Length: 289
Image (cartoon, rainbow, N blue to C red; front, side, top):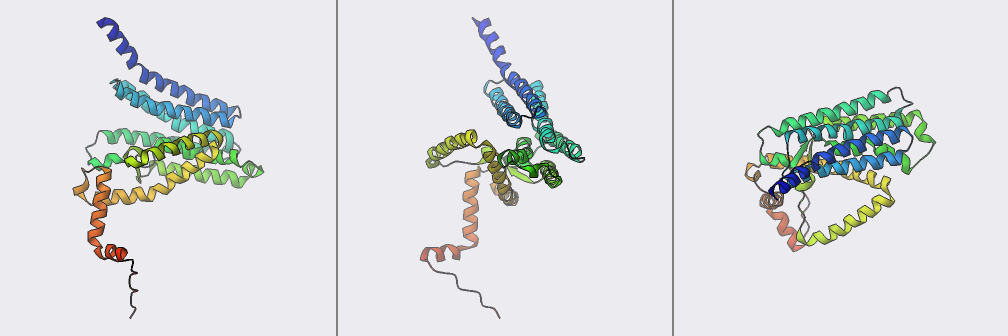
């Protein structure tokens, strides 16, 4: 009986690595579909590869099956699925006629690899607790979504314009911009740091269901909305990290507690604003000399 349990545990520990290998296969298959001119299938397989890549690490932690080899395979899978695959998909579907197209996609793939290498290096550094709430630069999955954004726009709004020199120039500039965000040091929030109030759980689950339905029916629009939402969040992430870096007393606090501390500090610095708001009065205009 003990042997059977031990064998079962060893078999379960192979599951995270098996998911990672499957994700690599899906990412490479997405390139094949792009080369065959099947852009929708290419994006679908890339999305499936990203989902498996997100699940393997969580499954490894749940099964207590983390290992050094698994970490290395996962990093290589990220390079393939979020670096090589999106680059070749964009080149095959949008930039192959352009003389600069290959240079642009090479830049993107190299930036993803550099970003992953920096991420792995930062894991071994001793940093304040709040640093774990932020990515340094755009994470690789977000970079991949950003890279295929022009392809989603082309599929949603087809036309002859996409074959023009101006379209290729616009896509090239977009890819360079995504590449620079990937290797930048701009802080970007991690998803798990966003706390959800208990009374908002049910509405958010309903919105999630609507989002899944929208992704099935209007997948290209959902990709573009995700890109816009991520870009919009960047200034707030920069401001949030700048604030917490300047307040060491909040370094060990949870994000929800930190927001309360921030509001308390703001009220203490501007007490008149709250009193004016309570009375429903307008602030007097400033007199100019």
